[in-house]
Image (cartoon, rainbow, N blue to C red; front, top):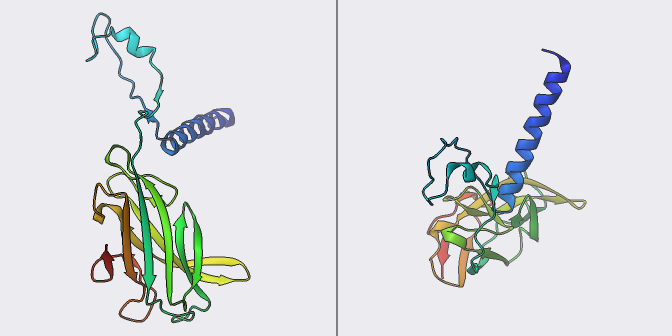
Length: 194
């Protein structure tokens, strides 16, 4: 296979990958291309030729989004030294980065995440995961010389929260039974939803 063909294939792959990522980031939906037959109509009664000229990406509906404020209150933090880890901190993961870092020996911590609840789905900078399985991460790591190095995370599933409320407070016991930072999916009795 000639080098030019490989370069062309990589460029096409890059364009499609970037397009899909941008569509996901801005809540656009990529229209599925279905070849029509001349003289047929789509479900809206338009001739099939009209479908061929439709845009490939459709913007999200412009409904007024509902919002929910999630307040996470952490207590019983494990300490600054846990097992092999020193200078332990915890924060709310926003996209890929920790926000609101607090030392592991603090008495309590609080983080606030504003979440949109559009079309029965959760969205926002702190929201992680795929549709139908969205969650918020509390990320644990060492914080040395201004550098945060994550070593575990705790996952708060958003489907576990009550629906139809503008503000939800979740209290989290942040030390597990082994005296380490609590990780994995957060469940009662480690959490209490108020």
